[in-house]
Image (cartoon, rainbow, N blue to C red; front, side, top):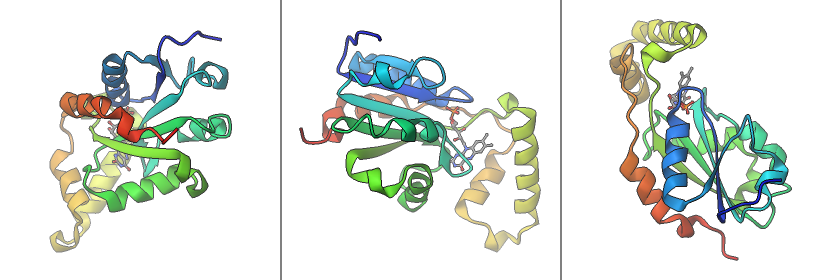
Length: 187
Ligand SMILES: Cc1cc2nc3c(=O)[nH]c(=O)nc-3n(C[C@H](O)[C@H](O)[C@H](O)COP(=O)(O)O)c2cc1C
């Protein structure tokens, strides 16, 4: 079992690196211990922390790594758990983000969890063959739709398609870290 040097643990699961970058900024600002969900984030190692910040990219409407977090939630009772999603959904689209959260974490846990979201995109040139093919099909499907029927997200997808535009909002991550106690549950 690791001996924590901080009250905070920041855990990430990241396919194209954006969630990891956000997690590193947050951990750096909080002097928190950093864990990769796939490697060293065992229940035992995390149970020693009072606040657990869990970061994962959104894929097809679900937060990457939420399945791992769900397995630990019973053990995390009494701790502050903050789930941070990272994706191309704008932070003000709470309607979409609520669905993403519901798809990822069962509602019965919501009393014990807070959520936050950062915007990021994967660079097109970094996409795996499978993701590239999926994007290509989606582009075709959206292009075939009459312009007036395309959603804001679909228009954004078309305009961003094929581009390398991963931008990490470092200032937003630092502001989140600075206000972390607002996210903590009352003791
Ligand atoms: C195949 C694929 C599906 C995606 N689906 C969504 C989605 O449903 N909603 C969203 O907001 N972002 C979506 N994204 C954007 C990713 O969430 C974004 O690139 C994020 O930075 C990924 O985090 P990561 O690099 O830490 O894995 C998708 C990206 C890919 C490649």
